[in-house]
Image (spheres, helix red, strand yellow):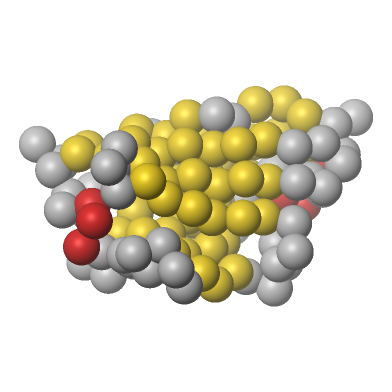
Length: 115
């Protein structure tokens, strides 16, 4: 059964931090580049960060570079997104998926940055 379950979102003040998790099942996790995406109200879903299958190579959108860190644990079929120095413009629903051959999207996790 293919399933992606994101968690760890919440309400945080500007400058704060959050750590998102995405637990994957049935997606041959360790063989694929994994990615985090986000979708803000009224906007298209955008790529935030991705990580190679072995976790060595990462890349980031310019808007989050230096503030966000993507990592993965292939033994736990889980990908993480550490978010620091959060800004109001980071407010969105965050999703994970395979970078290529995406599977059905999970429910996402809401991140709200507001004072």
